[in-house]
Image (spheres, rainbow over the protein chains, first blue to last red):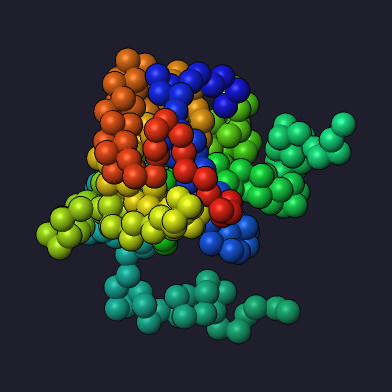
Length: 114
Length: 198
């Protein structure tokens, strides 16, 4: 506040007011500020992660939607439901579920060699 | 020649994570921020919160602080804005229950001794209460011009009003204060105080 101009009243009222200016907060103010700065610093990493996460969410959602559309488009001719198609799930029937190849893989029957 | 580092040096060190330098700045400007916050809100938790928040905001802005204005002006500007926000919040919350701001609460008029002497602390409390009775626009001008000794131009810049508005508000506020404080300002001279209180 380098530039100071006097008010129209250069009188004792001004000096009375200036002397009444509060000079400090309650004792321990510096400590309270320090504690809040430390708390803020502790919050900084979670906040930064949250910020980055929120930035990535729309991109991830858009990529997932694109992939689902691609899968669904590729499975148009099949009898798979829209959800199965979007998730690119293989068609499973009871027969195929109990078939030896689904239980033990393609090389079923103990023919695998170590 | 003073050994104490300049604000710029302390800010540079604080930017690099030196907490001691930041703490030195807090100590250096606590008075300026206190004069603004307590002057506007009265002595209490609201003012203390505003004081803390002022320095927290400064801490957050350390990296981008360019020093275009002095640090004191910068901090007083933040403290004034936060104080005005706090006053608005207080008014909204308490409008139904209290008829005026806490700062307008009456302080007992200091007794004048036979020699015309007055207890300094009592007088200061009385003067602050008188300032607290002003409406918030007038109070802001008095706090900046009288408590902070800002120039009219700085006051206008901080409050975002023309300089003419600052002068007219100050004139009205001083007139009002003169009425309240007349017994303690006699014949153009201030009463002698027996001691200077903090």
